[in-house]
Length: 433
Image (cartoon, rainbow, N blue to C red; front, side):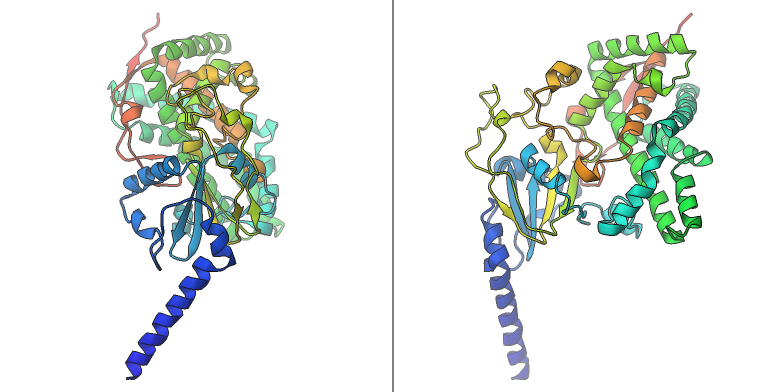
């Protein structure tokens, strides 16, 4: 009898929780957002009981099906996926909703890391202010000197292996990136600033460890992924590769092979190639925020959504949705960068999209590979310099031939854009007299 009473109490409590969550004020507001019908108690969570690769595909499918926003009930937790630039602008530009949702950043949770990438509020503001000077123009030149050294080491390592097909391009990119990130620690760097802050009691030993881990993990993964897809795309696009090589060889011949920040800034075509690679394959494909203050998405979408591409799905929704406190908002950068409403022929590699005349009228939040707003990546200038330098040097030594095609790459859910299988490429030595 007692057991039966307890069971009834538990069931009634669950029912009360269900009614309160789904049909209370927040639940009613949340249910106005389109999304798949939720099951009682578990919500939509069962549809994500998949492999990491299939979860990635499922998210993209839902974003297409419910374009441009989809609601997900995670049991009684609230979650939405967005991809439209207006919606991303509303979230990224908000000065109050700056806290990251930990669902996306599980790798840092495993490291027990609450550093700059995942921290919020006062802690994030203090750490950001502390580390920002590490990316000043003067210190960027120091990083560039280190990047020159490790790029040359990478070239010599590839040549010494005496093989044409690189069996895992990402591992090559990661070795270069980790060399630069760790190499910087020998000179004026992020670590120096953190050590100085520790001496002044502005950060403790745990905090110092958090930030070092943060920059190693994010620095090497993001650069490694970006380099992988830039090289693969250049291998597949011969005309772009030759234009980029001519630019690289011309500049390197004038500088005895050592590039300064001013030199790297002259690599305009290579920069456009890298930007287009980051559009198609952003190193951070999703960014998550937790809503700490109710926010309303844009009342109406930007007129640019009605592109000249008549095959594009036209929007008949206003986007006038309220996002209640506690909602996890996941901004899918990968899907945003391939939205045909903003990117004609979105799957095509076309560096000329980033010519000044072609960017003038583009929505400022249609392209956000380094995020935007207050939490924009502070190292984006360094990352761009680092990538331009190593791409230029590789192109000056090798002709790139495709082995695996980017269109065939499958991804698994991860904080960085992670290929399921190794990506191969052929590097043919250029013999110059």
